[in-house]
Length: 466
Ligand code: GLU
Image 1: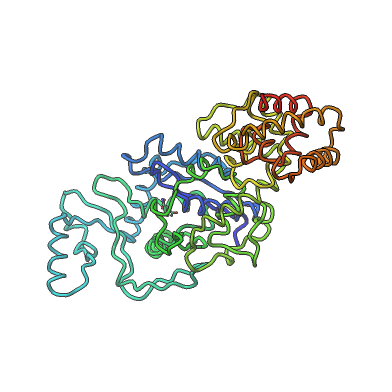
Image 2: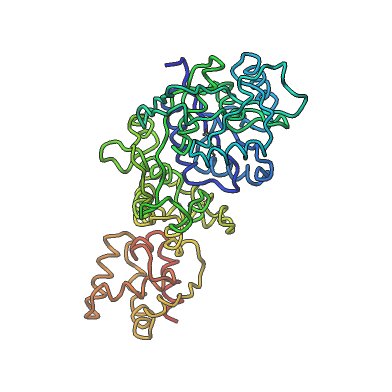
């Protein structure tokens, strides 16, 4: 094992950050942090039409929200083009690559003939072994002189040894005729120059690994450790797509999943530690191993995410939860909380966080501290405020004027009052919820009364009774 582990995430800007990229980033981040190594970010921005500042920014935003802080400055692949070309020329000089002058037409014709004759259509360039003295003064590409015989074996920590017949790997282009590097070359040169020791990425790149390994070999560079992660599927076992629901990280932020819950869920998606479903970042770091990554594709389970989200909200300390709520409100372009609202939220947090699965659910239940008098009942709550209920609230008010303001006393007072009305407390609860918050779904009436205090409780009851 090298002295220091270096991992990276190398997203291509697509306009948003896919959940699969986020999971790959997360695994790289956890592993680097666990090993006391570095986690680097490289933007694969060679496709100039897609690599807009906005698209790059979407990646930064997604990474930051998920808390995947990277080390050093992000690397732009595009800006390293000269270095990529330099390596291609070095390989040329060493005889590990060659100039190919074949035109598009010639290549197409080669393929036609091969197809007609039932041979492999993999292009075999006649320039591979040509004497440089015969080279024309014409545009050329630089191709890798890939081994034609034998096999290439990629030792993958997740997939095991994967064997590729060299006869199925072509002499891929390293440098195009306009002097720009291909993706395959750029990835290897960047990973090498950045000192990447572990390449952890989606298994859609497994084939690339075989071809990329030839560049490492040609340059005499040590191969990184490979770990290719299985795909993320939708609940129906098909490749995760918009059809199944959100695929972009920011959409999850806007749905109100707190970042620690998202990290936990994504970590579980394709990796496991016994039966543990809920864990903290520290536990993930402690438990994570590349060997623990599942070989089979993972299925996205929205219910499980909801479940974990609820557990994280309940477990989070109030200040961190407040930070998540503020980030959420910013993400959905909602107005900021006032100091009074924050104050109310913090006082109510203990009774809000136990039952909310998402931040909007928590905020919905927080209406009684976020709103102001008069609390106009919404449609559901209004059904609990008919004239009989209003009369009951009116009668209740004097009983609350002198009672000690603690849970036991309030429970006893409300219980006795309900009994005196020959009704159950349950029948009193609906009107009280409606009066105290204008909503039907709220924390318990006792919690609400304790949080807002006597004067405010009495005022709200009177508002509703009037
Ligand atoms: N840019 C590639 C992608 O977004 C990742 C390349 C790599 O990880 O080697 O799929």
